[in-house]
Image (cartoon, rainbow, N blue to C red; front, side, top):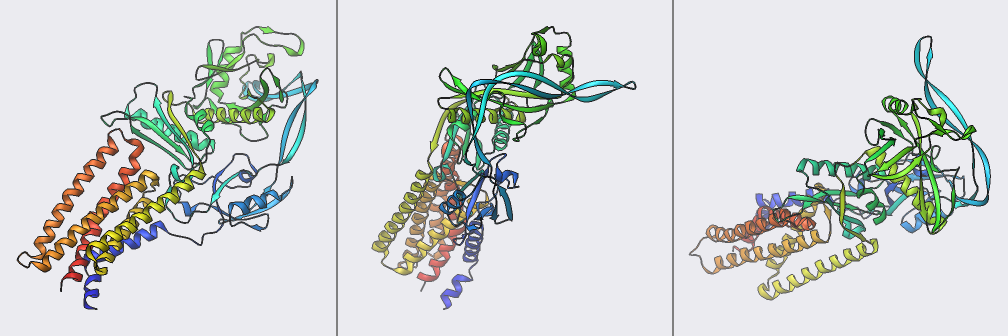
Length: 576
């Protein structure tokens, strides 16, 4: 009883136990957590319109909103969620209860536009803003222009209820953040097309993060990695959970330099003060009803359109450019001789005719149109909407400082991530069993074996707690670093234990002196490993940063918290 009191009142042991308690609080194990977690919310979906927001990238896993019931049916698993979603009808309003509140979602129809083999005549109305003089004062006035056009006839076909727009996953059981290797997604390594400064590289990271967030992706990691032998950061690593390689590559490889020109004059640019609003709602964006989808030479082609608003300065610049342009065409189909050309990264995206009524008019409302293609009609629709969404994102966030090239892109399946977790746990279990067997063969004393194993366990807990606090994503490299650090820790504890046994057999050298010898070896090993991990972090090993970070954390925890506490425990246990 006296030894136990001496152990638990030792200041080194108190520090260890306090660190373990804080680590458990940070990890926050919650095996009782129910529901499914919301990973992302699609723009303009039923969930988005009901008020459900995308989780913040910095949010802890357990703090993210979770779905508890859908359509009055409890949701415990991902399977429960999709089973409840399957039992819905078009235009039905269903309740969705989360950990925050209950939302009312209206199920939208999934509409397929079919192009018929005939044409129809339509009158298209566009609203523009013109300047008129009233009592000597020039004021902007909205003006509606009607234009009769002949277009392919289309027919809408309802395919069924549309998905409500939630990307969900099994509820996390701790605040530990899983990296891409463990939860699946896309990893991209980007290289600037030219030499850039550290400030420009930081601006690239900020711009990419904003672009990916606006696009609606979550669980994003954008960071710089070393690209040469001197540790200079010249590459950008992008990791996104739950996103396809096509979505990510389309967003990050485009510099996003958007320009609209009339003749040789640039009338407005994307991402600056020229564009004040980009519509992304169903009322003013989506598949162009005047064009729909039609067969093309190599499959199908669909048209999209969305509205943007220009600043008064940009609108006036357009008016000044068009004021003296001649007209072409006849009747109601008259338009200006120069089209409005839309360029993205120097490539012509679309050339639009400018109606005759807009000559010299400072129109602030502009309709952007484009086309997407695919082998099948469904593929063409998907590609068209993705192209539109990408262009909208570029117009909102603007261009990147320099063009980026994709050096490497990888896609990891969530199924593989689950398999990786199981394998990592098995490796950890086998390692613990192997260490226990070796310690048993060497010392044959439970009073020595148990403290060593408990110290290693506490070291892992504290390391994971720190990783949770700093919001570090744990991947396979991080887990490998923890395992390596545990091996180093067991080795250091054996050194301390051997010195303690020597104390029993040789009293000529005092306990303090032998502990000093042991910790001299431990500190020397710590600095050697620490310098090696710093080299791994800074000198061209950016993809192994997780290995370096977790190893450094575990080494610091072991050297300055767990090893001293273990030495104090062994001093009381062995010291007769």
